[in-house]
Image 1 (cartoon, rainbow over the protein chains, first blue to last red):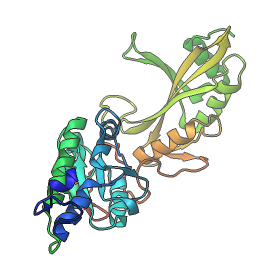
Image 2: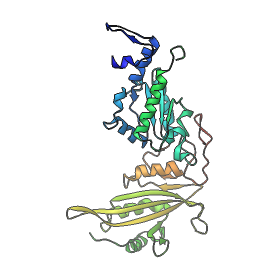
Image 3: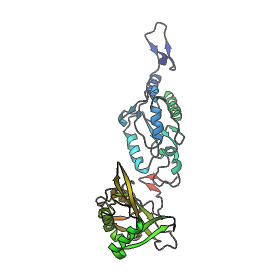
Length: 166
Length: 178
């Protein structure tokens, strides 16, 4: 019951056995507690991303589980340089994910092109030119703590989304 | 097997292939790495000779690279594309493998019609290196088993490492410049 007590609009009764909530906050709580990510890395940011997944930073404590297929995933973390060749693939992977789906853009390259902004003929200058981004994590590459901060921001966003708009 | 200095290799190649072999050069002169200039049409035969002759046995192609020389003012190869071959002979010495000797070879091809024989059948290493040379510089390696783009998507236009390359405004509907 510990987690349920933190939900908005919830009252637990001393006799136990039942709780009141709204469908919206229950759904949001479920979604933000099991953000399944796509097991997908592009460049050196993926190393930090893997470190965030490993035991020191342990992203799994937020319910983030790497999935092998976009059809199982809720979030795609764009971890690295998006080349033009890859951009078409990234877009296709995003389109294969079921709704609701979220995008975390990790690192300078996928935010805005990074060091390739001027002479990178092959680099997409920001993944938001192809797919909509929810959270941008700056850094080159960002430390795992920064990625976790981005994930917590995404959880805040999910917590406050409304059914009628989503 | 004894190490052969590059001067001796150059003299032997000149006696074997006569005027298909150019000068032995160093850039910068005196201190730079020596290389041998070979006419582009004969590069495959020279490479095969260097690989198979028991004196040299160049069994390893370290690197095949391409250069755009169009802005090299005052050089006779100005306005040409260059292909550079670094090869060496790796042989077992006692318990370990060692580089016995190595040699660098350069060829020049004209920008207007960049054709050069492929050495992919001499060393398998050259297969992907030549594909990258084709991808980035548009040099056609005649006789290559599978000359396609290797890094860029197959519908890409132009050769990005040429000095006159302009970044496209759009690629498949995606804006490219910042």
